Length: 265
Image (cartoon, rainbow, N blue to C red; front, side, top):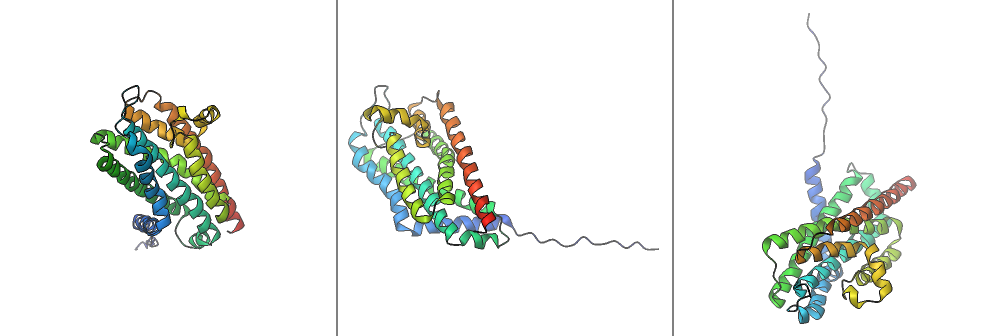
């Protein structure tokens, strides 16, 4: 007597990693090929550093910290803020209302892969933007950072950028393209100014100084300022605020995404 065994049905799994890599590459191409996006996220921070930073790069603060390094962190944070607002705010709004997300839902690709691809691409582009800004500051202004400090600063700024991405995603999933474009501009410029990225906080009006500790860009810059100054004692508070922003606005973006899916958008 022979026993018949039933062969397990063959399963075909789409390789996720290569697909994710293609998504990341496509997103990077979109960023690099868009001249306005490239100028806004890479060119403007470098230009601002040249205009406002270079005259002061040789000065030092009362605590002996090089002002050039402080300004480098400020405009680096502004670069990340702009990238998060325009890549995840206005761009996601356009893709959502243009039917791109609806098309992706009809494909076997899970939604999380679309979001993961955009986040990874944004972090890669951010690393490029920070590197170009530092290169300009180094050769044009003589601003230098030891390799270990530069890498530590890069990792911290990219990790903290997740909270800014969550804010951008919320705008992209809640607003229409026209409103998202306006919000991206307003948020990137207003909260950058109110966080002390363009002018030191002690030179701003008193009411802005009171608002700054509630802004994510202030806490992200605070992490960078403390790192280059060697004063990381208060870093935990900055990370708690950044984590809170990531959780709250990440949940808001997820709710808006589910709402769109329920509507079939």
